[in-house]
Image 1: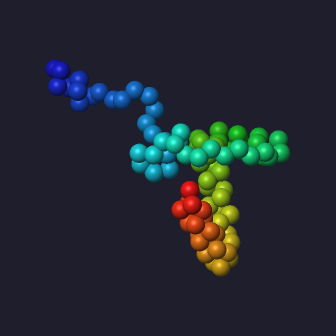
Image 2: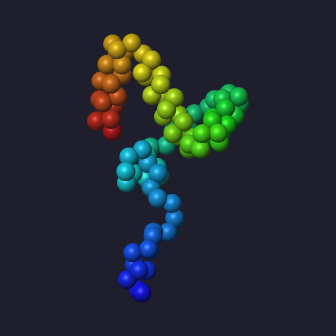
Image 3: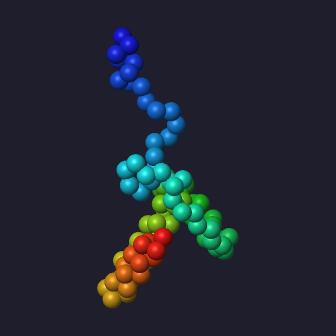
Length: 88
């Protein structure tokens, strides 16, 4: 009987919710921005309707914007962001 307990035991709390397996959101750099009230309201609504965390909605928006850029601009953004990540 105790063997079944060990198999069913789960860790307390929420599982890590980062962008990749095992990552924790609390370990991500924090960003603070100011936006007009209507955009904060829209972010709240998007999060509520989609069930996504606000940070995930913002990441998706950035990815959409990035993919709409011309290839030359995407290449520039890729190069610059890689250099910035290496610089830490």
